[in-house]
Image (cartoon, rainbow, N blue to C red):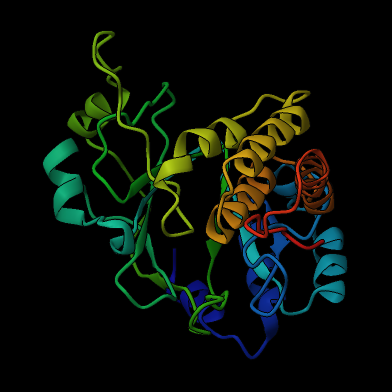
Length: 283
């Protein structure tokens, strides 16, 4: 990634449009995500979520004309992977390298949260990766399966931009790949990855992961099931917001997600006398 690209992507005054176009020009599909002040920051604006990402410049211009302050969602192509280190949830580069070996220098992004959170970009090795032995606070994001927020998007909590850190896109070492590709032993349950994005959701991380990885054709049904479980157990606002994000991440339209969650909450309320304990996610 050259210096000219660094400068373009670190300048917010020209709006997110130029940065989105620059990424698309490199074959990296993008789509608009909700910014600070919207109902669900970081969630997709568009129907289909990250699966609607494109490199078509006409579509990108139309999107950012409609949502000029939208964050840039980068739908990772199958040639890329990102290791997301989140210190807020206990993640660190040191802990990651203890698990999978020393990482080569590569292209990376500093989160606008300002706590040292970093996205490490690598070429995908082209074989299945499981990441079952990743440490707490580290998430593996693979091409074709999810998205990240790209610079110069402003972090919804701080208003500070995500920033590219100069470096060439690298490949993982053979040792890195071997450890990431290792399957967990059948007799040992793998530790679920902490759901990235919201605090205090450990109780629900298994449910959230089921929603986030639901297969096409089963996503809405899975989301409704998860929402019913949360309603039955008086989930708090953090859990409902995390469920909303999981529904968007799996590829459902944000409005469809909100409606499905609302339906489950209403069904629960109608089946019992009001207790005042349920938190309803407003549409």
